[in-house]
Amino acid sequence: MGKVIVATIALGAVAAIVVATRRTGGETPRAEQKSTQHVVLLDLSASPSHGQAAFWTQAYDENVARSLTAGDALLILGVHDNTDAAAPLFDDSCPAVDHDAGMDAEIAVRAKLKAMREEGRAKVREAFAASARANTTRLVEALPRVPRAGSRNVRVLFFSDMLEDSKLINLAKTPLAGRSAEMARGVAHAAKLRADDLRDATVECVLDNLAIGDKPRSVNSRAELREFWQALFESVGGHLVSFDTRMAQ
Image 1 (tube, helix red, strand yellow):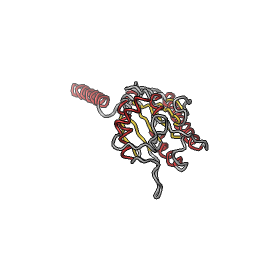
Image 2 (cartoon, one colour; image 1 turned 180 degrees about the vertical axis):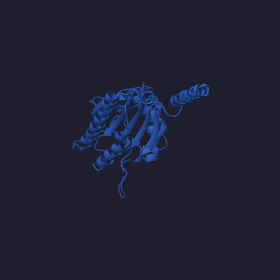
Image 3 (cartoon, helix red, strand yellow; image 1 turned 90 degrees about the horizontal axis):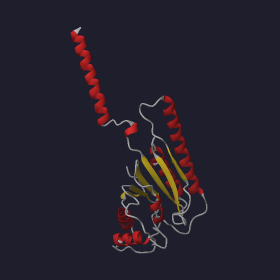
Image 4 (cartoon, helix red, strand yellow; image 1 turned 60 degrees about the vertical axis):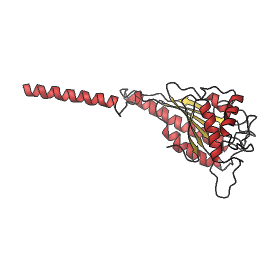
């Protein structure tokens, strides 16, 4: 009997260690994981060709919609003549569910997450399918509309050629000529951006997919454009992780 008691105590101790290890190691319960605020910015100006709609819609499906999880929030904004004033195209969130929650709570969260994915997809398709296009591309105006870092990580995604065309600067026609960082700081100052507008946010820019024979619509190379935007995002607390037709992995 004594051996049985000792064995039982030993097994209980091992189980306690395993549970503690899972909670402090690699397996973090879902309720303890930090969720993400996804901020999606759609270029609805006349600058990108209409052919980019299908490309960007697929990129959104694969890299945003599918990545949404319980606890995440999704904000979709249009970039056009009135970027700073137009209502969001979509703004919703899905509650997190504790790993000890009952089946009813789990089912409710799954339904909410599915609805958020489907409704977000529909809004992106609807926006890119619209025939009307803006005459200007006011990307910079979107930055103050990004929610500040708080309980969620902030992930900002531009689906755009990143050719700002506003009173601040016209990146299609204005040569950066080795002054990208300097000019970016000047634009940030002129736009009255705050140092924490993108505090701790990561930024991904999914550029337009130019086919063989297509001519770039800017006097600046993509390397120069990347340097400009990297400096601008950093000036307001953000971190550029991708500037390509590919998404960050």
